[in-house]
Image (cartoon, rainbow, N blue to C red; front, side, top):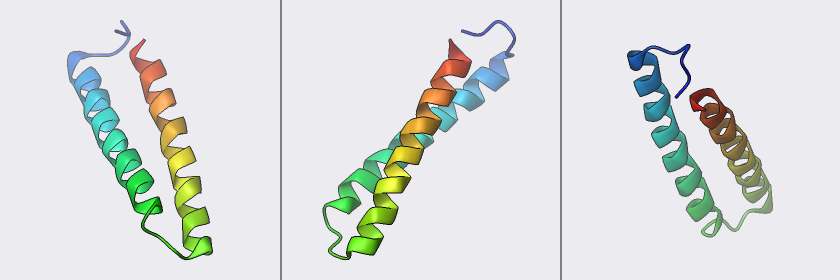
Length: 62
């Protein structure tokens, strides 16, 4: 755990990690249901963005 963060801040980061993980899962699953290529492309960018955000949040906790 990052020593510069308070307990409440660490808890907030864990909540954000949980939320972003859920968003990533939802976007990944929904991609398989979409037939429109433009929407599928947008959703793929969303998955990449969520992965990036998850890595950034994890870095704040270590």
